[in-house]
Length: 230
Image (cartoon, rainbow, N blue to C red; front, side, top):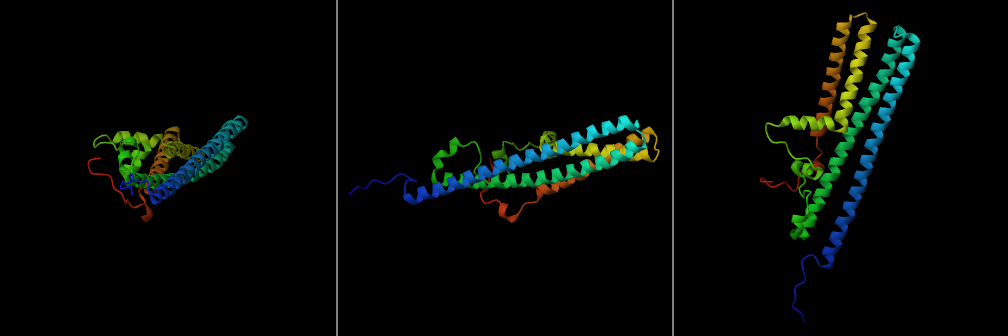
């Protein structure tokens, strides 16, 4: 009778466990791919609406010579663009929350892999921890050290919601300038109205996006926290 001890993880139960974890991992990867596809589709739709609106307003401007009719039509058209932009950013924030959920799920599965085969830890560049630092590491985002918050702000502007927020705020500024033009405000006042509208829309969308990021459902409470020295 052999007394050899089988290698760790070679038992049938461990093999079935590994298969279940791998199947769930592939499912999350496929779902994350769908999330990316919808994000890009939403952005494409908004940019198409914006481009069509600009072309339409250019044709109206040629016919009306930037008169009162142009201003009235432009306010209505740009209001539709503003609504489409706000709806797109809202959906992108939801998709980003979904993507964060899939990342947390994959990190938990990766933690399960390492429980069965801890010797594989040096081969993983992604994180097996499901807290915020672990999720950011899997996303390829390093936490910005203290005193270098400007890099984090620039990163937010490079994301799809951040980029669209600036564009939507510019649309809001254009609406503010056109409204000032309609009531006979001088050019300097039009510039001030555009700047105020831009700042108001930008601040509102920024606060909305920040709230969407900070809210976390109970199911995403960390179960495997990153080591303090990580």
